Every structure is written in structure tokens, then in C-alpha cells.
Length: 365
Image (cartoon, rainbow, N blue to C red; front, top):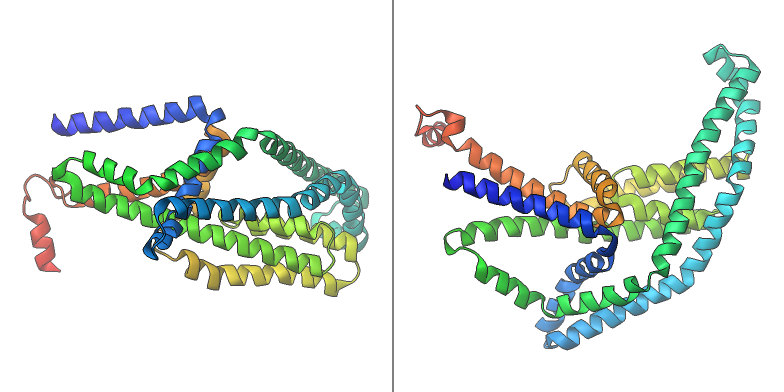
């Protein structure tokens, strides 16, 4: 009955959390963003404290510097990116038409031999496919643009988020100590162990992946802009920022860049190859240098599990869901591994007639 009551309690707590997120998701964005900001900046505050600065001034210094950098980037980049996004949306139908003509004129014979269709059939099928794809992409870009405008017009995001981050960052150590004092003494060490594993997973991914996204976004944007690719700054930064979803950022940026490069540079193959080389180099850097060094393998989040969590939480709770998807999925992963370890040492796994099976297994090993 004790185990049953514990399971019932945690199931009720989980249901209550999901209900809370679902009901209040429209107003949670500034608070979740403030909590995420405080979590990301807490190690910096601890470092400043270690060199003699008190917590209050450390918090004020960090937030002022962060807000200055954020506003500076916003003022410099937002107008440029907004103009490029609006231009890309307007030019997308013309780009699709030119790309369709280019493919049919240069590769039509090969497509006819492969498919067995006539020239008009190939052009019609290809046109329908590209039109549907372009329509989906245009709707996506419009939703991002309108959503971004709506997001930027919400004063609460810029007022409430820094206030929430300030108070949480200021009281972070006191809050964690208070929560620690509420833990049952019998299970305190176990809870500490699980919370530490969750923190390692979340911190290792979030802080590392933020760095990876910023580095990749800068690399892609600079590389494409140097090559003179139209909308290169927008495509590069966008591809870098959505690189937290495995393979999605690079694939999206690659497809957009390839389409724009074909229309803009054809038949200059060396320029098209150079555009592809930017993404090839970025993927090499991400897979062999950035991910191992900044994120590492200790995170324990499988790419498939991460993608499912991001899409599922985004579908259920919108943008707020995407913000909490990584920490929640990391916590679920840690708890699932703990539950599996408990099961593998329990009588349920070995059977009621083998009470000493774990010891025998260790002795056999």
C-alpha cells in the first residue's frame, strides 16, 4: 500500500503539472524565460561571488551586461533579418518558378528517362511538388514572422522576464537550500543524486547547445554573406538557431541555400559548391569539435527522444512547451534510468524464488 500511495501521489502530481501548463501556457512565457535565464546565468553569479562580489551586485552586473548585449544584437540584426524575411516571402514564388524551369531545362531528359513521363508531365509533377513545398514554407515563414512580431510586441516579455530572472538569480541559493530542507531525511541522499544527474543532463545540453547554436549561426551567416548569397544572413542565423533540433537546422538551411544558390549562381558551379561547402564544414565542426567539446556525451538525450519531446511539447503547449521540453525530457530520462535500475535489482525481475540473485550475479561477474 505504501508503494501504491507513492505511485498515486506522483501520478497526481504529474497530472497537475500537465494541467497547469496547459491552462496557463498563454501567460507563462515571460516566467519560463526568466527561469531559464536565471538557470543559465547562475554559474556566472557563483563565479563572481567566488572572487569577492556579493550576490546582489553580481546579479545586477550580470543582468545589465546581458540586457545590453541583447538590446545591441536586437537593434543591429532585427531590422536586417526582418527585411530579409519579408523579401524572401515575397520572392519565394518567383524563386520556385525559376528553379522549376532550371531543373526541367537542364535535367529534364534524365527525369524523363527515370520516370518514363513526358516533358509536360515531368514539368507538371515537379511544379505541383515545388508549389506545395513552397506554399508550406511560405506559410511557415509567415507564421514565424507574424509570431515574431507578436512576440516582440508583448511588453511583458521584456519587462517581466528580467524582473523574474533578477529575483530568481538573487535568491537561487536560498531557494535551493529551502527546498532541500523540505526533503525527507531518509531519502535525501537519493534525491540529491537524482537531482544532480538531472542538472548535469540539463546544464550539459542547454548551456552547451546554446553555445553550439550561436557559433553555427555566426559561421553559416558569415560564410553565406561572404559568398554573396541572397538572404544568406537570414538563412545562416536561422539554421544555427534551430540547430538545437538534431539535423533539422542544417537540413533546412542546406535546402534553402541550395535552392537560392541554384537560381542566383547557375551555371557557376563553383559558387554553388562553395555554398554547399559552408554547410559541409559546419556539420564537420558541429559533429567533431563543437558537440564533443561543448555538449559531450554525458547529457544522455538521444536525438530521436529529443526531437519527439520538442515536437510533442511544442504541439501541446506552444512555444512555452518547447522551452521546457529539454529539461523535462532530461528529467524523465534520468528517472526512467533509475526506475530501470531499481527493476533490474528487484524480485520482480529475478523472481520470488531467487531472493539472492543480485548477489549471485555480482559474484558470477
